[in-house]
Amino acid sequence: MPTRILLEGRPGAGKTTALRRLAALLTTRAATGFTTEEIRQSGVRVGFALETLTGRREVLAHVDLPGPPRVGKYGVDLGVMERLALPALLPAATEEAGRLVLIDELGRMELECTAFRDAVDALFVAEVDIVATLHTHRDPFTDTLRRRSDIEVVHLGPANRDTLPGELAARLRRPWTHEGPPSHG
Image 1 (cartoon, rainbow, N blue to C red):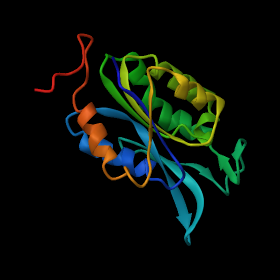
Image 2: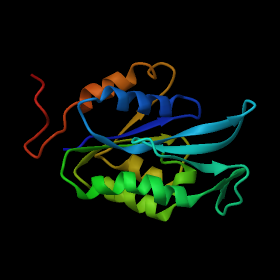
Image 3: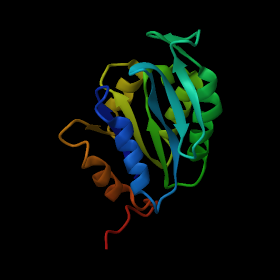
Image 4: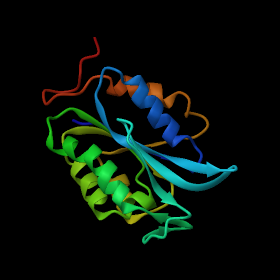
C-alpha cells in the first residue's frame, strides 16, 4: 500500500526545509513535485516562488501581482501552477506504481488552482507514495484529506524538524510493490 503523509505545521515551522532535506536524502529514489519558498526584500516577505524538483522556478505570488485571485496581500499567478506544478505532478498519477511525489504545499494560494486540486485528488488515489506539506489552518479540501484513513498526518515542529526528514527517508528509500512493502533486510 502506498505511503501517504501530510506534513502539517505552522508558518515558519520548517515544512519546506524538511521536504527539501527529505528529497536530498532519497538519492536512490526518483521523486517528482515542487517546493515553495518566501521571496524577501529588505527582510520583508513580498511573495512566494515555486520551484520544481528539477529546478524550474517562477514567482507564484507577489504583492505586486494584480491577481485575481488574491490571497491576503498577494496576487497569485495561477499560470505558474499550470506551467510548473501540474507537469511535475500529473505524470506520477498515470505512470507505474511506486513513484514518489513531494508537494510543498497544499496551501491557499496553490489550492486556488482547480486543476491543481484535481491533480492532487488523482494522486491520492494513484499507486504512488506522497509526502505533502500543509498549514495547520482549516480548509475544506485539506480537511477532507486529513480525515482519510489511508493518510497519516504528521505534525512538524521544533521538537522533530531536524530528525523527521531522516525518519521519513528511511521509510521511503525503496518503493513498495503490489506484492507488499519493501523488505528491510
